[in-house]
Amino acid sequence: MMRAFEYVRATDTARAVEMVTADPNTSYLAGGTTQLDLMKDGVLAPERLVDITHLPLRGVTGGRGALRVGALTTMEELAADTTVVERIPFVRDALLLGASTQLRNMATIAGNLLQRTRCRYFRDPAVAACNKRERGSGCAAMTGTARMHAILGTSPHCIALHASDVAVPLVALDAILRVQGRDGARGVPLTRFYLTPGDTPDVENLLRHGELITAVEIPLPALGTRSGYLKVRDRVSYEFALTSAAAALLIEDGIIVEARVGLGGVGTVPWRAREAEEILIGAPATMEVFRQSAERALEGARTISGTAFKVELAKRTLVRILRTVSGVVA
Amino acid sequence: MTGAAARPPRAAAPYEVDLALRVNGITRRLRVDTRVTLLDALRDVLGMTGTKKGCDQGACGACTVLLDGRRVVSCLVLAAACEGRDVTTIEGLAHDDGTPHPVQQAFIRHDGFQCGYCTPGQIMSAVSLLAEGRGGSDAEIREFMSGNLCRCGAYPNIVAAIREVAKAGDDDAGV
Ligand SMILES: Cc1cc2nc3c(=O)[nH]c(=O)nc-3n(C[C@H](O)[C@H](O)[C@H](O)COP(=O)(O)OP(=O)(O)OC[C@H]3O[C@@H](n4cnc5c(N)ncnc54)[C@H](O)[C@@H]3O)c2cc1C
Ligand code: SF4
Ligand code: FES
Ligand code: FES
Image (tube, rainbow over all chains, first blue to last red; front, side, top):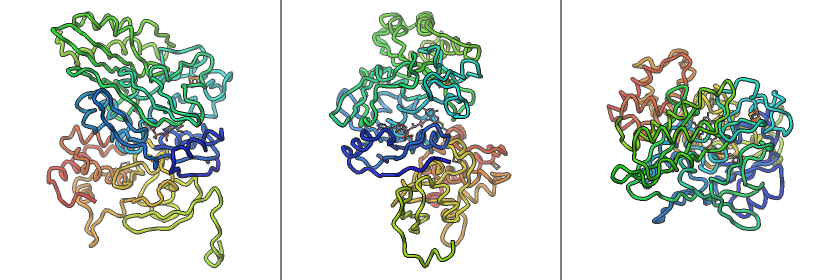
């Protein structure tokens, strides 16, 4: 049974920020698909929830070069946006390949980016050893069964995966979070927002307690850019990724002039594969170049027995999506 | 709870909320603990047991209802968050004269269930899928019904039932 809590429906953004900032035991509630789930599991136990779903932070507005997505826009709403469909279809694909329609109708974009790991030991308070739940307690995944865990950005203290799908194309696109604090607003690039575990796996990102994400800005790639998202999983639908890859390519006369690559299912944070991009940019769009870029992207991988298969799977996932997006046949 | 009705209403404690929910078009007033989910409010407070509890963790779809016309899993929605909102459950699908909804009829025709436990959720999801315009092909139906699990494996018949209603383009297939 969940611990008793007070429920407050926020109607004013500044008041909501003030309420949560002032009290370490108060949390925001958006779609609730992570927050309530973890409260039922006993992993989270706030004394008060501030429901932000009635704040005016919903909807997609378009500038010429970027989209501004209100933090409370649901996954389904964002996936249906015409600019998203036309200019950055891999964002739509990543959204629609995640969770189920029911969950996507509830889940907000900010909540999605803040979702907690699916590491089963983290989610089970009966397991004592979890550095993410309690710093210094150990890591049950290292010695237990770890299939849905990370191989990039890991540390000896935690190998928990960041399981968001849409975060993968969003890091590739250099999306920016708009954040409102008690003392003012700031912008945080998504590529710097997430923190790899190091020896503080409990600290996952740069958001300070009480800071509210108000919007996600997505810079649009050049016209003519083609993109795709490939998600490989244990069942065909409604499952988290074993590996996934997001790629956006601008190809002129067979030469890749721009490349953005993100990897999912492998990183402790949504993974931007800059090494892969370096190989791709300026090179001809060929299978050999794709394979080379995949080799480079996974160079830093560290595995345990349960995750060893992911290295080759991740490479093939990336090669496959590069091939699909570029239309290269052999 | 003897004499509860006779006592003057007390003010809600901090861990309780007073709510007005519109369930299948009827406004229902209730006072619940803040921890109560929409699913438990429907089943345990309002006695509407058509909506089922499978996993209680958002994973199986048995508890699917429409909230303001969109399908959600009611086990991950706080009742407190539903103040003033419209909820449609399986009990609200049939026409006023009692005729089952076209999707309900198609499930019966196609034997779209065995034990029936997942069925209310499947049907609510299917009604929503049709409204979303996602009944175009078997593959599309399977993909967009994937949030509803069936332990009995009635999937082929469920898909057939939905496909039939989608093909008929039934004007009555809404809510
Ligand atoms: C069965 C299941 C399957 C799933 N499958 C997938 C999948 O395949 N792919 C995928 O990507 N995801 C998947 N998810 C995760 C799902 O996408 C997330 O739970 C969801 O996006 C979280 O959004 P929310 O609005 O419900 O957030 P909430 O649960 O309301 O909030 C999440 C956290 O963020 C905080 N928060 C929320 N909004 C803000 C804000 N604006 N500013 C500051 N803090 C905020 C909350 O306090 C909370 O700590 C799945 C979830 C479930 C339950
Ligand atoms: S991998 Fe991280 S989250 Fe999982 S048990 Fe280890 S420390 Fe905890
Ligand atoms: S009971 Fe709600 S999804 Fe399973
Ligand atoms: S009919 Fe038994 S679970 Fe679906």
